[in-house]
Image (cartoon, rainbow, N blue to C red; front, side, top):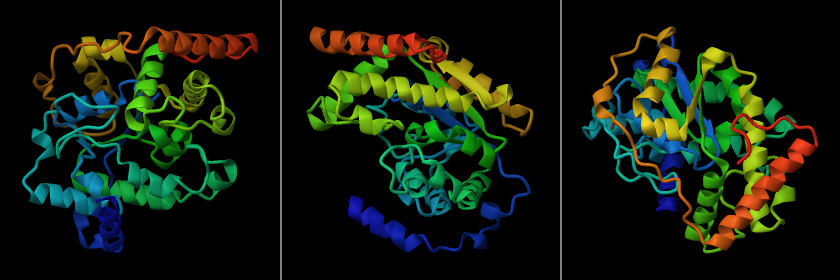
Length: 328
């Protein structure tokens, strides 16, 4: 299936979308919403909440199959009778993946197309960043946003986390939603993903920070703790360059206790610059159950906690300011 999808996208990449005025000729494209944060910190849930209130558009599992021509994917979605305005999520996922044709998708192949340029981390080195195809990305995203007609939500922490200033430069009207969760539960979920996908604690999973080459040969617990610490450092560094009105912070437990609050915060951040339809907050649950409890064996849990404490303690001893979500 992966090979067939790749062949399909090679075929549709040359489609001339200029033939569709609604996809390219809007005077002002709708703004973008980028959801960022550590792996397994609630970014998928944030995307599902925003997708469920009819005011925003998003990348569905249907559209994600057409990463070389996403406007075509949106056309296919509509032709099949699916309306994003009617979508309500199940608010369920497994390690960031959703089930159902119209559930939100990370759009990984699309972002790989722009950012995967031969480096071994998820952060572009300076030489590659200087030659990055900003015009191409801007055009592709704006064509999709114009066709869909509402602010467009993207959730791909793997690539967006480390390129926040660049994305803000390309899309100056974008709002960034920063999802946060207690470090120990992010670490536990990363370990669970390794075991689920590979059956091996030592097999790297998800985002690779700039010092990945140094981390990958450490003990598995130090890998995960370093992955969290150094990724968070890069995220908060990037966010610090944003104007306050372009940033919405979403702590996972607060979002679970009051799901509508995140949607209302994003809505307010965008309403000053774009005329939005009314929110359908009644579609959202009043609360969502927490999954934050110890789910691995005692030995694994202790090793994760110790590794997190070492990383944040060493950073504090070196005089570094702790990231905004604090040590675990």
